[in-house]
Length: 102
Image 1 (tube, helix red, strand yellow):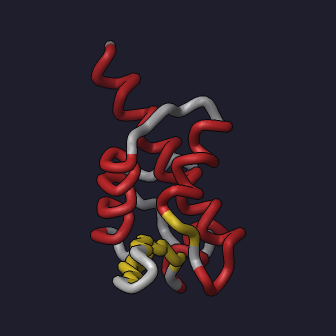
Image 2 (image 1 turned 180 degrees about the vertical axis):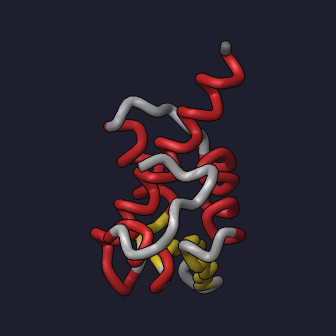
């Protein structure tokens, strides 16, 4: 039963990430922001776990990922933006996608 629960939890986490990226708009959402949103929703994930779920969404074509670095300021961010397919999925204009909770 635990495996079913883990799978369902991942689906809900992915849906939350997708929804957050939609709200963030064109600029996308930093993975640190996604992590904070997930924490408020009751999911305590480390940075790598968030990136794993983002990568899954990227493989499905629902988000795009861009690493932004400024070596002089020592800033490194990973921005996640929703794609047109991701928007269609959220709006119900795309078929169900296995692995994403609705």
